[in-house]
Image 1 (tube, rainbow over the protein chains, first blue to last red):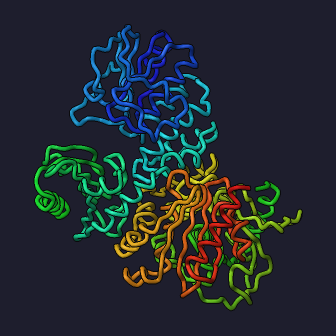
Image 2: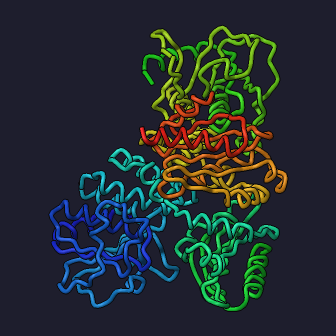
Image 3: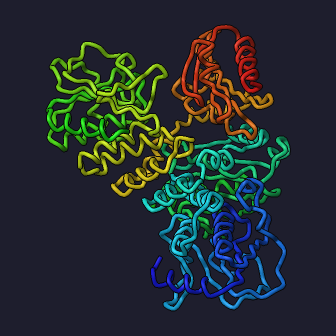
Length: 320
Length: 320
């Protein structure tokens, strides 16, 4: 994050009054936590703030302080500044017809094609572990007192985007900010209970049904979830979150796959790499996308056909 | 940690030459990581160091830099100072006939009966998340440069004792030290892969077999592992590590139980509390022990009998 951009941004915030905060569709912790924390910080400065998302706050994030300020109702008025948070462009917000004099992106994702113009006000730092980290720095620079509510939102954002301080984006900086957020009132165990220890009994029954499908072929491991399993356990797509971690946690796994049956002959595939294989590249060849270590795509065909295609592509990527 | 004790300890280390480091039986990451890090630090100061444990370094910890310096061979000579690390007393080391002029305990466990004498050299701080935190502070005070090897050992110690920075012992201090250790070369993802993503395929098959045994009765959840499951999956007691996390992660669970069949009619029970119930007290009534949130005991009887007794005791503890 350049000091130059930060300074311009501080001035912009100080000299304006009406703010709109939006984020990406299907928002997760970093999108929601960063949006709320930024809103709470701006409100502390006496600003008028409107937080908008196309989709609802996921149930698992409703514990976040002030989660209710995130609304789905398109505002009619015009804003001074619109912040696009944890989201590289307007398209990914799924929103339109919003009016603001100035638009500013705060994000840690960098699109391959993206060039940050010199005069930009956008706070884009791919080195940040989470957008929450950037919002922390912004609020800190604005001399906003980080209270328990802001700290809880930002801690949750950073916690989840670093996979619980486990992924390779866990830096000295993210841990230092986490330390300050805990000092400011974020409670690691209370947040852990909400984020990682809040599975339904049915979700566990789903895990129980799909674990026997785990396969290991060389350095590739996989797990499969079928519509039949959803039906038997009264679960849905949402309950497959983190199920790909099971094959990933197997010793010797370099790439882990989740095959999720969405419709007859339509599979969503989640790909996870342990660092040596760029799975975004593989997903892209099938019309999908993602990060180097976490990507996804959809394929039509029988499970055998789909598995055959993906395993072949991953195998070839491991060899190269 | 009092500055007074720390000062005495620095003087003791500076004025002596031959050091022995021991820890508790069945050592885990904090015991091994703290022992090795302390040894490496003292060696950097030109000291002679001998690291001893009654039991071998667990396979999962053999990735720790300099893990090989931990030996099981009883030394014949006499030492200037013996450090008992991550262990409240000599008894828990399972060792005897060791000779040292002075014995110093470095630990974050506090026995209920324990009173720290005023003239003590023992570094006992129950507020520390892990003994690794105390060793970090000691080495830092000794102006030892924390290199990648020391940092990796200490980070692993703190990481595991805080349950991956999740438990309530995760403090601003533990995160701050973690931040410094990452800056000094500890690699969160590499360590995560060794500690949390290193399960055997057979261990996953074991999980797959025991998940269907999960039960939820009010705020109590449980899971059962039988000898038959071990046999079918070619696994052993070691593979049940963290299996109690599955029932604990269920929404609404206050106390999670693991019933492990060790012999016919002999069960080891692991009890985990999410914070409201002191499970150490329950374990104690059955001759076991542990911490408020993690305890264990052994009971004889059929599975139905054993489960009946434990569920009754936990139910009554939840009510009170």
